[in-house]
Image 1 (spheres, rainbow, N blue to C red):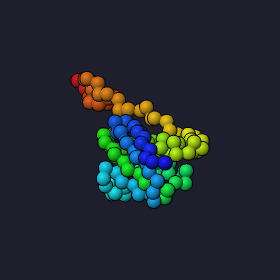
Image 2 (image 1 turned 180 degrees about the vertical axis):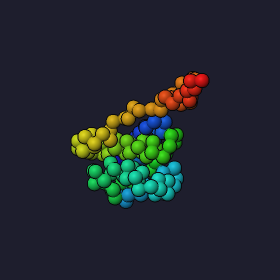
Image 3 (image 1 turned 90 degrees about the horizontal axis):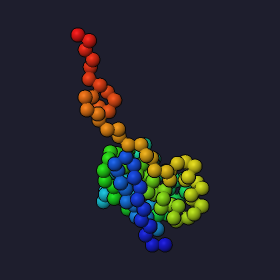
Image 4 (image 1 turned 135 degrees about the vertical axis):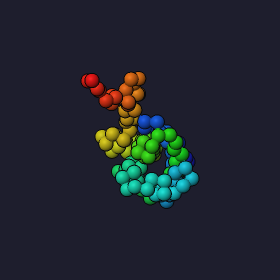
Length: 128
């Protein structure tokens, strides 16, 4: 099989994933997976494509991820792993596609407008 290389993106986060046959070891930025994503929610998101395709212990995953925050990075990794699982076996696509794991989430942070505190929040209005 060799190594499968896939990229996933979410907000400003970019994840490069290298999937090889192995025993289920996951390393993120040369750190342990559970150490890099400490909360159960983030760990669930990252492992979602592997658990849905019953491949938790079949592959070793090496991940390089940068940009964005913790949630954006976790979802970028999820997308990249889902893409890799589709390349491993074409039947996995029919499992992952209905869950929306293969769709790039287009939502980005709205830009701040001048004369306002944030994108939509305004400075306090004073009548007098």
